[in-house]
Length: 127
Image (cartoon, helix red, strand yellow):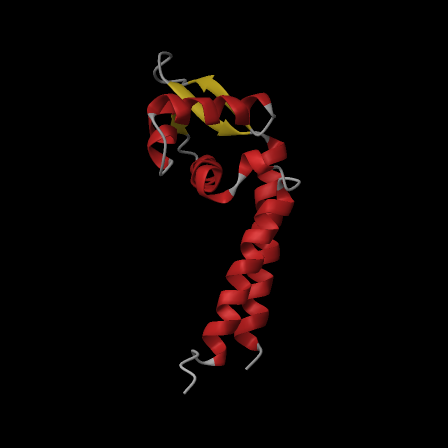
């Protein structure tokens, strides 16, 4: 007997798989920007900026789910070096380093979210 989930769950799984592929394609399939290590950092830094509450360096490190503090700081440095993030001093507290998305990252994230939202809507409205 086949215990496969209903078609809706399979369709959702395919959308999620496409989401991961779209993320990879957004960053030119570069193995250095795979989802688990960078998604949380880049998405949350962008959302924080859009909400006018930029992330501190500490918050950015905490947003990532794996790696030592040094590893997390190296990821941020890589994203800065590659033009996705910038580090600025906060206006209120000049000692605090803030992690902000560049316009390039904002454009990439917005495109990724728009494409994947469209895919989810198409899956949901398919019925």
